[in-house]
Image (cartoon, rainbow, N blue to C red; front, side):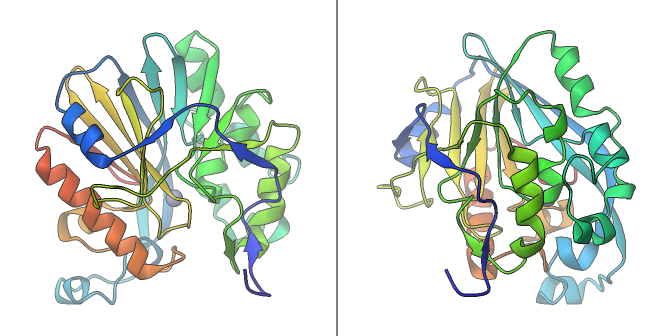
Length: 296
Ligand SMILES: [Zn+2]
């Protein structure tokens, strides 16, 4: 870590007691068989700068004449229901408390000023999403620890296990100077972040794959670039595999044209590589439903 880099949070981490690293072929052999997981994606309205969401300097974006400006997007939480493991969220959505009283829940001054929080609309709020499930929340799987993904934490019970990708919390980045204090506050009083374990990919397609419940129904894919420990997820549902890309790709245009995010990323080459790897995965499994980071 360099001198002017800051971790995403100082919150403690521990290896997740669930999940096992597997080769991507184990996942790819399984996912076209219908599975028992149910995924519901719930978005709330937000706006962000297109130049952050999409690399506007990419030749394809230049050729298409795309210009910077406010872009309507969604902040998602994905409800993942497993028949025996229970009900989980992937990313946290938006809590009303977070939008109405950001200082009280621990959002730092810089993010309150420049983070676009007053443009977030918690409709439905994360509390409402959890209540509608009528069951206790068994855990939260994070794609990464950016503000628009942790914004539901005030509504998440303090004892809920939180899972992240490998090294997501510790990765250094200058931008984290503004995010770290906020993440520390939102995670205060919670158990250590549980890091899913990855062990490369003997099949050479991804940075790593993890069979989260050990039954081949729900997989985590390490997709670094946007952040160092960024993680995407694949669920086996009755209708076919559902891919939750996270911020490997924010926009519909970016996915359709293979263009990685703009300024909102840690490592451009890594981010593009992860995007192309997920795109290829979806092409090998045409039945796959793809849910992007911030647009339908
Ligand atoms: Zn995001």
